[in-house]
Image (cartoon, rainbow, N blue to C red; front, side):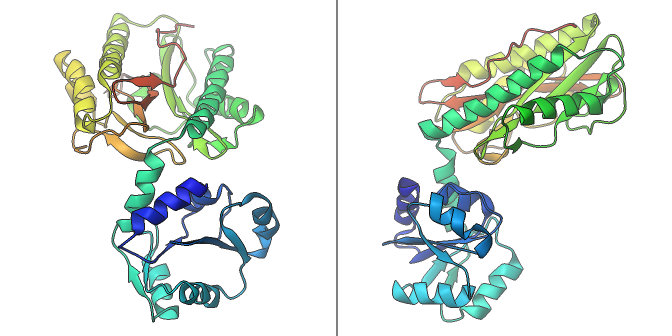
Length: 356
């Protein structure tokens, strides 16, 4: 945590004397502690965590690099620290602070200038985009939980099982084997519902010959996994097999090309070209991928308009799909840890079409 705080302080030099961090995810990133409240103040010389009575004992136990202060009179405590460090300009998180919160800070701390542009948010996103070896281990652990859940689900998936039952089975296996949380609400769709990329599971039952599309992930120590697999219960039609193979080819083409320095739009184009050439371009309507880490959607992105280069150390999904309305859909999603010349695929589960 020391390195994260020091890098943030360095990124703000010459722009702000202090950073105030209130976002739950960013606060956890800098302190290593999960909480629903608290304020981190980062100065050039020192960092502080102001947190209320509910969390104070835990904070004093686990937070090592920020001085922990029990919250009493919040704005008076912040003012005291700002004066002590001779701070004048205070950066806030433009990406998460509400207008109401900002107005309150300006009212209570009127003698200080608040930097409200993207300086602090961009600095935090830049830090969080590049994963350390320790962060990758947590992401791998989350992915392992998800893959074990899928394997267990496939052993019980059958005709007549509902979408809700499929989702609940995946959730149960992840949580009961150590997941801190789910990455997002599990998507489990069957039959014609699979044509909806982010459909909501309901009481539709699996029929013989249906595709079943499952998009899900686990959280371990604050870090998410994300994967999608499409399987068939029974024998797929020739069209279903063809579409599956096109999506798989699109994904493998992108995985072969991904590397640091290429634009997200170039990665998206690599997969999209395969699908368009096969005549299904109109049925791939979402971006190819997004960053994953302490949030399920982070920087960088890989879409048609993603003009920023992919960064070495970032984790990005590669998830092409084809969705034919009222018929069926296919999505195959892995996620990769990007390096200078290639990537490590963090998803180990087979992509061969499984027919149960």
